[in-house]
Image (cartoon, rainbow, N blue to C red; front, side, top):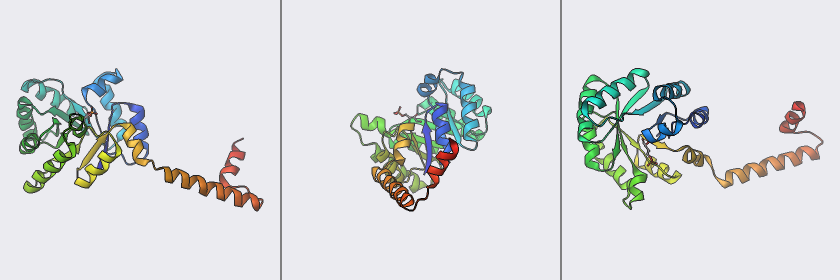
Length: 231
Ligand code: E4P
């Protein structure tokens, strides 16, 4: 599963990228607006941090011509930029044109299997079902993901399924079990994926036991030696 961060915040992206397991970033107009920077500059800075990672930049027009213009514009900024287009009829029209031109499009705001089917037929590079927003209204987001994967496998569609609007680590794990190609998550969810109290407790006990044994032998441990040399 590819990991994307759902943020336009450069500090979060830098921290995520430094771990070496980040494959891309999704932005949307709400996330980009929070950063209060010119959009192009913001996207280029993200591309610079991610190096080979995919960077999703969303259009804000809702008419065919406007979406075409914006999508062509954002992908011209950097080879790693993918244009995000909303799942509306005009968006699908724009997607059909853009996919024929070889422009990579992520179809966003997908909430039903039929919408995902249409996106694949029109040549989407990525489709983004929003799981958390469905859960928010008591509809099972993971069930939608299952249905989309079933349809795409039946027809061998090449469109990548990006599980979006993930709210907690279990969403990520379940989406991975279902086979989503990509999961995009807020930085706080990404951080939670690493955590387990038994890891922290176990490490703490290992280090204490080690220090105790070194001390009984009159040796100083590696971390202690480093602390001393730094003083
Ligand atoms: C995906 O591309 C969207 O930016 C995102 O996952 C939306 O998540 P939210 O429902 O938490 O806003």
